[in-house]
Image (cartoon, rainbow, N blue to C red; front, top):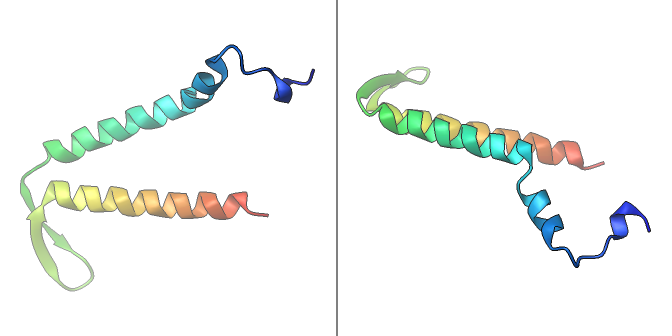
Length: 82
Protein backbone atom coordinates (compact mmCIF):
# COMPACT_ATOMS: atom_id res chain seq x y z
CA UNK A 1 0.00 0.00 0.00
CA UNK A 2 1.38 3.43 -0.89
CA UNK A 3 1.76 6.17 1.77
CA UNK A 4 -0.97 8.23 0.13
CA UNK A 5 -3.57 5.50 0.54
CA UNK A 6 -3.32 4.76 4.25
CA UNK A 7 -6.41 3.72 6.13
CA UNK A 8 -8.11 6.38 8.21
CA UNK A 9 -8.71 4.11 11.17
CA UNK A 10 -6.08 5.69 13.41
CA UNK A 11 -7.50 9.23 13.39
CA UNK A 12 -4.11 10.88 13.95
CA UNK A 13 -3.42 11.68 10.29
CA UNK A 14 -5.67 14.73 10.25
CA UNK A 15 -4.28 16.09 13.50
CA UNK A 16 -0.69 15.69 12.31
CA UNK A 17 -1.44 17.73 9.18
CA UNK A 18 -3.26 20.37 11.21
CA UNK A 19 -0.45 21.10 13.68
CA UNK A 20 2.75 21.17 11.69
CA UNK A 21 5.85 22.90 13.12
CA UNK A 22 5.60 25.59 10.43
CA UNK A 23 1.98 26.38 11.31
CA UNK A 24 2.77 26.50 15.02
CA UNK A 25 5.66 28.90 14.32
CA UNK A 26 3.48 31.17 12.16
CA UNK A 27 0.74 31.16 14.79
CA UNK A 28 3.25 32.03 17.52
CA UNK A 29 4.71 34.87 15.44
CA UNK A 30 1.22 36.21 14.71
CA UNK A 31 0.34 36.22 18.42
CA UNK A 32 3.62 37.98 19.28
CA UNK A 33 2.98 40.55 16.55
CA UNK A 34 -0.52 41.24 17.90
CA UNK A 35 0.85 41.63 21.44
CA UNK A 36 3.46 44.08 20.14
CA UNK A 37 0.85 46.01 18.17
CA UNK A 38 -1.60 46.39 21.04
CA UNK A 39 1.10 47.28 23.59
CA UNK A 40 1.99 50.37 21.53
CA UNK A 41 -1.07 52.53 22.07
CA UNK A 42 0.29 56.07 22.14
CA UNK A 43 -0.49 58.54 19.36
CA UNK A 44 2.06 59.15 16.65
CA UNK A 45 2.35 61.29 13.54
CA UNK A 46 2.35 59.35 10.28
CA UNK A 47 3.23 60.89 6.95
CA UNK A 48 2.22 59.25 3.70
CA UNK A 49 3.80 61.30 0.92
CA UNK A 50 2.28 64.71 1.67
CA UNK A 51 -0.54 64.51 4.27
CA UNK A 52 0.39 64.08 7.93
CA UNK A 53 -2.03 62.22 10.18
CA UNK A 54 -2.00 61.66 13.93
CA UNK A 55 -3.32 58.24 14.95
CA UNK A 56 -2.67 55.56 17.54
CA UNK A 57 0.47 53.62 16.76
CA UNK A 58 -1.34 50.28 17.16
CA UNK A 59 -3.67 51.21 14.32
CA UNK A 60 -0.78 52.00 11.98
CA UNK A 61 1.04 48.79 12.94
CA UNK A 62 -2.10 46.69 12.48
CA UNK A 63 -2.81 48.25 9.06
CA UNK A 64 0.79 47.57 8.00
CA UNK A 65 0.56 43.95 9.20
CA UNK A 66 -2.70 43.39 7.31
CA UNK A 67 -1.29 44.90 4.12
CA UNK A 68 1.81 42.72 4.46
CA UNK A 69 -0.28 39.58 5.03
CA UNK A 70 -2.44 40.33 2.00
CA UNK A 71 0.62 40.89 -0.20
CA UNK A 72 2.19 37.67 1.05
CA UNK A 73 -1.00 35.70 0.43
CA UNK A 74 -1.30 37.16 -3.07
CA UNK A 75 2.25 36.22 -4.05
CA UNK A 76 2.01 32.73 -2.52
CA UNK A 77 -1.21 32.13 -4.42
CA UNK A 78 0.35 33.23 -7.71
CA UNK A 79 3.37 31.02 -7.05
CA UNK A 80 1.24 27.88 -6.64
CA UNK A 81 -0.54 28.28 -9.97
CA UNK A 82 1.25 26.82 -13.01
